[in-house]
Length: 149
Image (cartoon, rainbow, N blue to C red; front, side, top):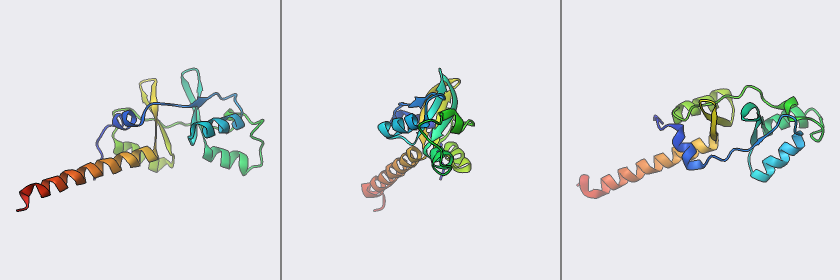
């Protein structure tokens, strides 16, 4: 099955709230922000420029497992600096491939240099599920409308 819808539609459906933090902030402050907003990652920005991403996975592997102190460690010390992005016109299928092949959960959507939002693997799964439910409903209506008689 192909999922050719542009990811722009997923983002429009989800909303475009993006939470970010600066590289100088402490990891503890970042964790507080993640908890407050109910998110698993924050973009790390300097002005409008994305310089990294900090996820719960970064915390677990680079702070908790190494016995470091999140209250004094700066975000820049543990953030992931190679941030993969997608375009709003990229297909849902392409975004799923990026997320799956690179084992990431958060994908910023950029139009040129402008950040439009962030989609997650869960957002894509919800989108696909919704599209499948629509298809099932259409097929059911088609069958029940008398075509099969």
